[in-house]
Image 1: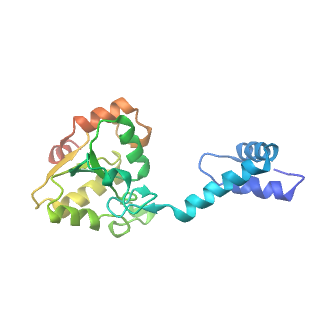
Image 2: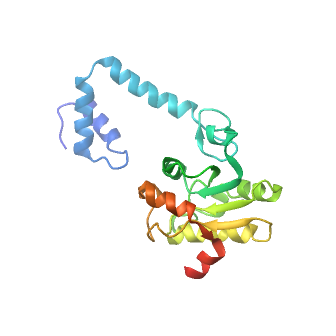
Image 3: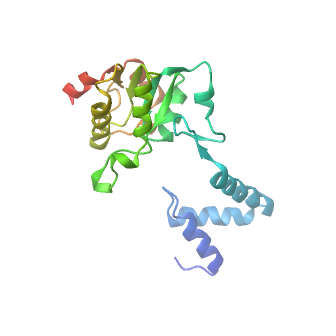
Length: 206
């Protein structure tokens, strides 16, 4: 895409690296920013820089947070004995939008995927096992997407904690096989949490 300005060309190249944004959309966004007052662009870049520099991860669940312990973990009305295990922060947002889950979360930060070079040691699994060992957690709900990588991760965690006194359950398969949680509608996702099944049963049916 030939442009008369190298500055514009560079801006388009950077914007187009964002997920789901091609060169044409990036050009449209860049031209839109050029038409806006300068302070609007400064506010946008300032917000992005501040987020990048100051955002942190909750020391309890690994969710994104502005403080050391996120609002969910510090909420006294949440049931800390029930932990929903999810892949990333987008899944936390999706489940929270249902308004039906009153426990807390544990964000793994991904799924085991040898083909992508992601092993158990690169995920937040050790801290999850520690929570189980302390006896604080009474139930773990596996809420990873129903893909091969998600099932592999669930089974790996199951092998680490199956001998401890804890209830293990999995979201009901209202979520289609291969689907990601973040794209499920709120009603389906909410029902999948409420009608969760024993994890051992999900192993037999998989």
